[in-house]
Image (cartoon, rainbow, N blue to C red; front, top):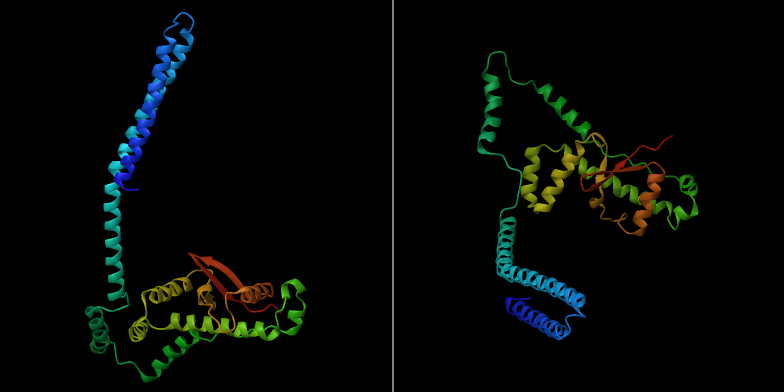
Length: 276
């Protein structure tokens, strides 16, 4: 509703109240012709009239405030839209990415040379380098594939098993291992190498945010050291977020192959070793 419409509605409302007040005034005049028999009625009418006048005045004040606020609200909306367009333009042209400053790059290149020149620090021996490599490989071990057996599937109740087959469930387990393996590689990758990969792939801002969230989730106590993936990682080819996919997750949770937890706004699914 614009200012003209608000003003028209206000005039119409005031006109109807004025008509009602005039009728009440005429009624008061008519009652005054017999003051001895209508004192009580006149008092009641007078009180009702005063109350109505107060209500009309309050409505007038409220409508006046609303009418004055309309131009300010329009200006605020226009300013918000302009700001939103600026932010969208900035997010498109300046995507967020992990980078190193020149000082950090120089420090990284200077430290190895300085350590060789300091007394008591000799060059690294060739046999010392593979030790670090082996440690990194341990942290990047592939998630194990804990497929279910036909006996486990047959042990489920008919309403839980539904139309699921052994091949469908084990294919979904393969997908979950792939999701967890992708997250493990992301977590184990050095930050410098990760920054180079992100630059080459030209990832969008929401993909960069996903990678950061995966690293943060991996450091929480309930997930640390375990293979996991997020519900948002489920994109097929066998496991999807449809009715069949939800039924498969329910079966695997019942059989102890996975557990679920919520961290922030993410639903995190953890791969578990089957109980023997």
